[in-house]
Image 1 (cartoon, rainbow, N blue to C red):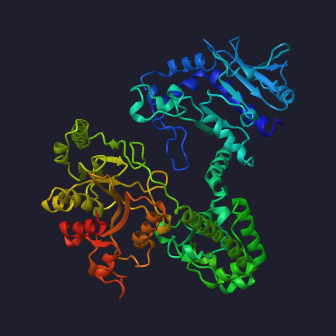
Image 2 (tube, rainbow, N blue to C red):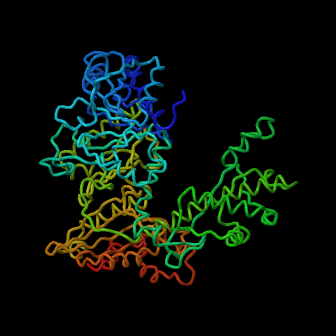
Length: 640
């Protein structure tokens, strides 16, 4: 059809509604799959985007749900054809209904006559003209309104307000409207809340079995993926544009790390794998065979050949990429770019067949120039994001840990093989589940199963901490894992035993101890961008029972055999003290520790400046000293 832009998206929505009504068998099948968690819609990583979202409907069959949708959404008691109604009495409005049922939707669109004319040629739904019908938009907020769907309306961003919005679909929105996106988002997050509190409920206040959190969640969908990507990018970048945002305060030169970031951010590195594309191009003449991943050649561009590059073209390509990413504060310089590229090749890893780097003519020079542009865009992205994260990593707020914190694990999920061994493990896991549910931590701490780690330490904010033993071949898969390495398991076991010892009772008298496994993502955990984007494994609290004063330590047990003393992770102990000064909270003292799973004698990169005593001054303690020794040192350094 000739309709484009917003009109085309609206027509796509109408065709979808039509298919839902006209092909009920297919719709019922889809509903059944959604309720049963059978993946149909996957994200780029292959995950089911709606996994677990329809649990409240598990007790109902798909046909009943379909009939309920007809009644609640479409105001119809039976399935009939969709009807598009041109409301002559209200400019810019068209109505939607099923058969002769009350209108369930309203379309607000600029060229309503043009859209209606195009829609008349669509056979999938019916059209009619209402010469006397009045506008419907103004009735949406009326008590008892039957309108459930609003399509294509820019009035969302023009001061209109409604408590009823629960789901949004982006129609030709989010590609350049800037702050309009935030306005749109604001229309949906409004909710009355209990007693007009204007707040969403918290876990312990919700009536059981009502799934209130589903009703209080705003869902946002995009008709096309690029709309959602643009919407997310804008939300991610919105804070950058504030007065104290990264774009308004820092104006770095290309690839030059500002002085206050040196040694505090993770060094950017670009990786480019050209094997898939090159093989796809060359297999037409069978010139190359498929290369196994472990046989890939690591190559470097010919720096001598760079003298023949068109540096104006390279510079302009990078300038265009900067504009595309809206990095207005990144300053580019042609000569700095040339010096960076010709001065070193350690900033990238390039996987490419050896033959593809041979230069026999100017075409090969042009090819290498193109590869350089790809590497530069990847490196520039990593460079900019590292600086941005480093800047934002200075700002922290003090907040209380609640059940909703991202590090508070709600449940483990198991996929158990349908074998005799699998059933044995399932029985064992159910026993552990029941012990934990009953609060029988003493019995839970005695639970064991071959090749599984399950620690029920009462001082951890949730338990058990579970993970498969890497040495075993288990008849199950689980996620998430509470432990990533043996050093973490040893630390928790050491801390549990130490806490129950006479040494700890004397050392920690009058203070309570709490532990929490820290999630390792920005969305859930607590990380430090200015310490190499470091997410320590554990948060360890001591709380004075009399005054409430807290000592919070970030603890990371790890192997450090190959770690350089200049690694930003080893600087967290001093970085955290800077954050403490900025927080200016006398009741919160911060510390950070690295617990080395590696013996001191096995370290490779300590040099003369890394004696054992010097490392301990930098809060690097060695677990092979023994449980009581290294944990006593830790709590003494905490200073509680």
